[in-house]
Length: 379
Figure 1 (cartoon, helix red, strand yellow):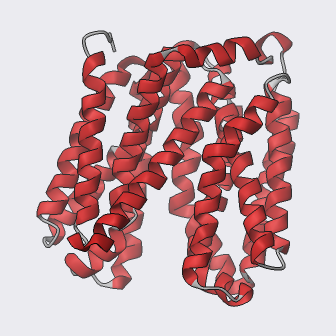
Figure 2: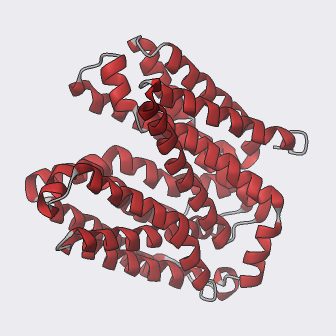
């Protein structure tokens, strides 16, 4: 794989770390801004909402320039937003910073995946995407804990600055190392927009949204389920979440190597395993061994199926930047829908296990969404 692909993964790592880092410093932010913990939680929601809505809009405005210049513009845009967050003087200024960085990261995700696809032969696009998206998964395993530690020892502002510096450095290296070829890099507006007339593309988007929705319906509530139902100690939770994170990285690597040849088979088998794991967890949540096994299986499938999702989208509609950016928006929408429905299940009185059943239902619908394509697909 070209070294440039790993550099793109670093940029995605930093941007994803920014998305979730607020979760590790909620108390500090609430104290500084004089608001409640739930109000700080809206910073994460705002970031995700900006990714869903603002990312594709910003990408559309960049279609007339080359991908390298578009990505560099987004890196600068993100750096300015992250810097604003580091200097935020009140709740409103931080909210603005989160919206700006969310918009930039969504567009950067799409362009990074498109660039990675242009750097390798067609039969290696899924593997290239898996490396870029490894940055996303490593962010939850390393980035989030690291920014939390920085915030605890040096303050949350230093944590924001650290992410800003990593993004800026990745931008400088991209400027130096990423080749810019007019024939390969130019984005064709007409072709990009024409891709969305393909109904099979929207079906692929829907499946991706359901996979991520099913995963995050459960993952968002792992901590209370594991402590209050499975009876794990609070001290063991970081290790269990790390185990889940390691499983997602391993799953991403393995699936990335196979996604180009067997995208649909991976999605069918992965969704089947995800569905079985969620049901197993829901039924046997009081058993620690079952809980651990379920967490590992959810990690190996779930989010780790991203390379297969991307390979399916690219096989359906090509590797256009808008195609990949809108795909990112659907994935982010899946996070919001899954976590929200899981929360509704709990608040409606169905207990802490209800998010697992919600996730299972979304995974089942995702599996059904693929059925019409099984006979048509050769992969």
